[in-house]
Length: 93
Image (cartoon, rainbow, N blue to C red; front, side, top):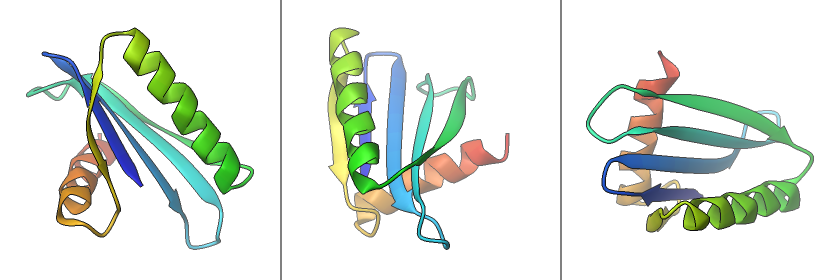
């Protein structure tokens, strides 16, 4: 699952997925739209439910900061694949 929030200048992107060991990973990327300023952080969740709880918390935080959800997609959808490409670019920084 991939969720993205944006304001006029900034974005936050969350990716929830399982790694090759079956662990649930909560990845959060943030930055300024159109620049390379930002960051990427990965957190290991105890289970899928905890990762979803973190997503709910993130949604509440971003809504309170004036961000609007612009994407909620499956990893395998075209939109999700495009968002994954953005995460891959950040992972090498």
